[in-house]
Structure formats: structure tokens, C-alpha cells
Length: 295
Image (cartoon, rainbow, N blue to C red; front, side):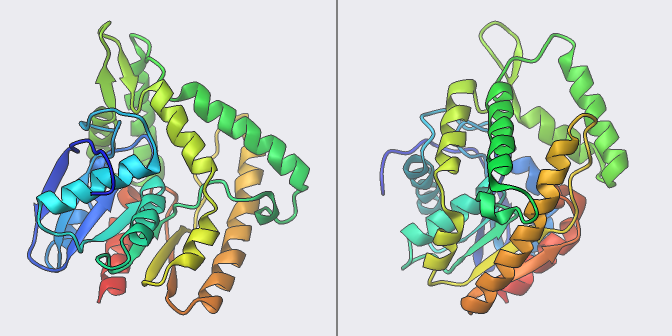
């Protein structure tokens, strides 16, 4: 064991083939894999977890060593130390970190759209100074909303937003509702709040900001699958500056991922027809992409 760990909530989807461990994104839960996991089970043993501070798992100081210890403990408990970590967003970054920390037992890693905010030079067509200023606004906004209490009538508004997303992206509403409800918790005062809590959410955001992801990708000696969303998230009124930022980043990522795949034969880049919500939006292609990589 690499360090102290927290006992994570686990959904054992079953299966008898080579094991997979499914890891969700920041502020999300294992419910995000509800439509993908059944498509993997015919060929794999599949587990999904709530990361520390998320879903039904306990909270604790958020650090990559702690998170990796949590995962190692789950795989030891279930007797599958050689499972392939498959992650989305933050979970994809964790999958790569886990594979690098366990090169002898881990067959590789799958990172689906887990690229963080990148570097200013990865936003072609925009001034790097302007990019840095806009990214500062994004980080400040993320830190402000992380773990804050939800107003008494706020749940109704959140569910209405999920219903609108269901119509806009073609995602079954019940998947969005289940994912949202699992991501909330009731505080001592009876008010609902999102997880992870404010202090742990900020620890998580700070840890991610310190990652040089492309440096990690280049360190991989085992096979690595990098999946990239082809479509932007729906626009938010008043956030046009963010839409422009993400459009530039999409171009920079496409360029840099192509160069990485050409440079490193063990790296596979896949393009997923969907937004960042690809697990719920296009589970069929996500599952096919994972299965193709594992075959």
C-alpha cells in the first residue's frame, strides 16, 4: 500500500474478463458510468468507484497520493491489482497517475477528455497573456461554486437544468437525475450541498493545476488511450469569452495530441462524437473505444 487510504463506495458491475476500474470526473460520481459499464461487462470484470469526497465515499484531504492509495486498496480488496484504470476528466488524469505509479501491475491507462486547462500556448490564435487572465477567471469561478450550499429551492432549479440538458444533448433524463442526486449531500444544518466540500474541492483544484499532463503522457511506457470530445459544451449566455477560449483549446489539443501520437507509438488518440458529457451522451462509442483499445 502506498499510503493511508479511505474506503471508497464501489459498484461491482460483474463480468469475468480482464478487469477494468472506472473513475469519474470532478464533482461527479460512479453514476456517470451507468450507461457505459453494462456494455463493457460481456468482455470485462468491471468496477466503478466514487472517488474520495464524492458520491457516497468519505471525505478527506484531497491529494493525488491519497487518491491513488484509495484505488490501490479497492483493487487489493477485490483481488484485481492488475485492473486497467479507465477514467473520464479528472478520473482520466488519475488513471494515468495510477498507471505511472504501478508500472509492473497496471497494463496501461485510459483517459477520456481529462486534459485540464492546459498551457497558454495550447490556445492558438489567442494572446497567451489574455488566456492566462481568462483561465484565472475560470479557476476563480470553479473555486467559488465548489461545495457551496444549495438554496432551499435550489434542487428544483438544478433538476430543471438537467431536464434542459437532457433535451439539448439527447441524454436520458433519468441518467442525469441519478448522477445529480448522488453528487449531493445533506449538511449538519439540513441544507444540501455539492461534493466535494469547499476546502477539499479547493485542494483538488489546486492539485490538478500543478499537473503537467503532457509530460505525464510522455512518461507512460504502457499503452495509453486518450479520448477527446469533438463537440463543445452548450453555450451559456454571458459566457461568450469562455466559448472562445474553449474553441481555441480544442484546436490546440487536437494539434498536440496528434503530435504526441506520432511521437509515441504506445499512445492511441480517439475522437468521441460528443461533448465533455460523453459518458452519458454517447455511451456506445465510449464503450466501443475502450473495448477496441483493450482487444
